[in-house]
Length: 485
Image (cartoon, rainbow, N blue to C red; front, side):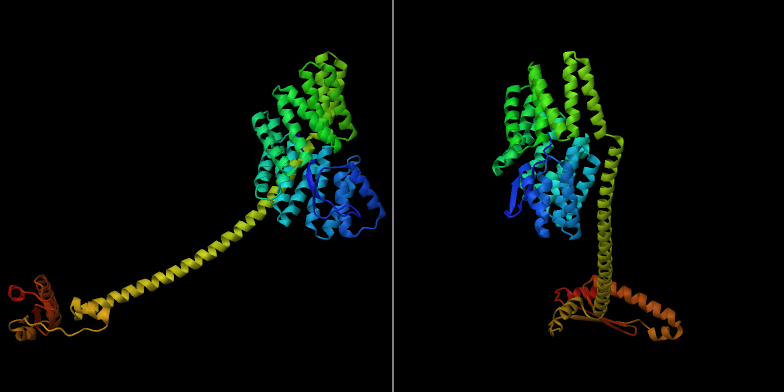
């Protein structure tokens, strides 16, 4: 049982103008009363929108009239860019086509409604339309798409504030499990929705949950409980003149009585269901009930009656499930999802471009900072090396840290002077470049020797080399180390 007809609506009834949100089910009496108000033609545009919506929702006897009201409201809402009413008008149009079995037209209207709902950024409205789309795929027998949209709707609605619409989505998702004969899951969903309907004191919702629970009980062989729950649900639904639901529940009552051997009562319920479905032009139910009657009469041996109802079943089934409609629905879903995906792709591309710009900027900044850091390090190293060439390590460190060096007195140090024997004579005869290379070589060796004995190089003058022991740090072995060097 797909509860497409449970909805919340804003009520704005003619001269009564009930301000605020009014949760209610379809009621032909409301449509009749508002039709009189509409016929007077003295309504302002805003009030006219409210009246058109309420009439189209509550009109049950003449669905063509209901569609006319919907189309008039769509024109008004589109002209004024009123996405609130545009979403509701398209949704109501979809639900009327869904009841008639015009699934491709219903889907088209639902997707238009979803576009308008997304423009309002209202999660509850988006979830309600997703539920309607799921209902349509469910009626068509496309369980995969139906389950996907039910799950999407429930996920969205759990973040919203509309408990009634959430309960409806959960109830309808349970119906999908019921069709798949997953009775435990179906019952769990029906019970969760019943709890929400009870908490919100939503009578028609409680009736659907109770009736659907009865369907599970009938399917699992608990006929007494099934009859009680379905009968109680039908009594409530008759008050709301909900022919679609009543017709389907009556079919399940027929099943229940048939299984218990009460063939006559079962046939009465089945014919009652068929008459109601024909009266209100409910094609899916006409098809299903004819199939049920065909099966009943076949078991009774009434071949002609069985064949007649089977032909009716096939005729209505094909009018609902024709291949062209299936293809149109597939195209609608594909076109809609492609358009949504294109929007997502455009947004992602823009995000990627923005990210690339940010990353490039960060990369350039990082490269500049790295170059600056390396350059500073390089200059600092060069400066430190130069400083160490001039000053002892400890003195250089103190100079860098404090910016100055305090004089220190050393009581005992050993100073070593050394030069090359007959350097002047050798230098006069030697090649200048070779002389410089030789001096550099020997002085490097002197540096290594003095360093190994802890001596401090003071300076070189020509061929003379001067160093000292016992500074810049005191060393009790400075005399010995100097002699050894």
